Image 1 (cartoon, rainbow, N blue to C red):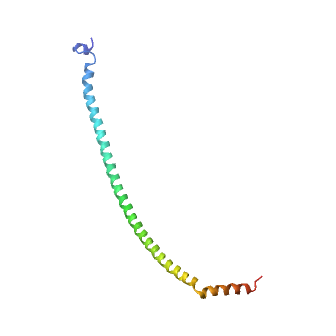
Image 2: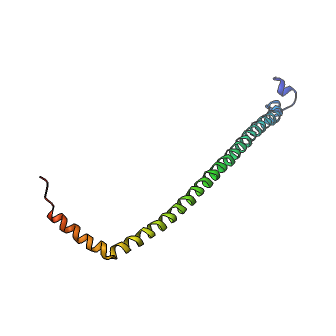
Image 3: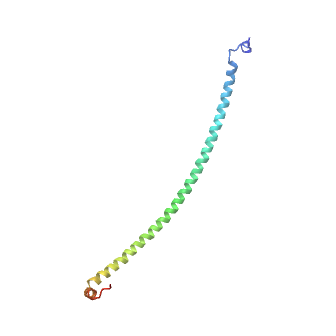
Length: 118
């Protein structure tokens, strides 16, 4: 008679008594793997958070520089508009003056009389 039957235990009872211990060890090992994965995820999350902070600071600095440049360009455009307005007013005055109008007719006549170059 086999030893298992001699002890009065049914077949596989010894195997079953070692299964809970094995299951507990497997669960502990799985828990350790999960904890290690969680620690890696935390480190990765912290690294990503630091990277995002640096990136946001960089973007903010670039945006501030661009805003300053835009303000300078807007001021330059305003100044140029003022200058162009003054030039346009002077040109309008010249166009309406008699001397310019008469001189334009004289230039046209002089062009007509000028000999053509071959």
